[in-house]
Length: 217
Image (cartoon, rainbow, N blue to C red; front, side, top):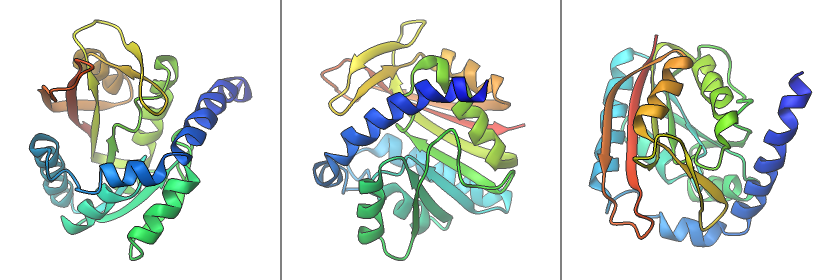
């Protein structure tokens, strides 16, 4: 049964990986400011880092790290951060841009991390391309690698629609989610969502930027 479930995951992830491999330098140049122009997201990440430090386990995975700019930010905030990404070209760029940090290629449904090892997981717009039916498996995998009481900060495109809305992202097809609906999925994976931030990014798409901060039971 596991093989049956893996095939559609592999298909859409292979397409997404190829799309991001083709835009590495452009993507990196667009996000090189490390959220200097995005105060809401920057402060949510700062809060996440402070709370993770408070758990006594500073090891954190930046899942879907892209060019590594947020992995470096987490490191600067005092965390033992490493990055994982589906795209080998993104991983290569991150390694060159941040040679002191660790980056590896990985699929989000099979993270190369031992059970209960992490104090935190950052998933910054890294699950937006995942078809809704496959998202619970990714959240369960993030729960697996977190220690009890570990923190997850997930960011995504928000919508008022009760069900996820598929749209044409500039890189690959993506989905926006209701914050309430996403919080339900987190609860199903064993998380308690205790903070949320929704704000208008002045985007032409009309979506909100959504950030949910959750703790593993």
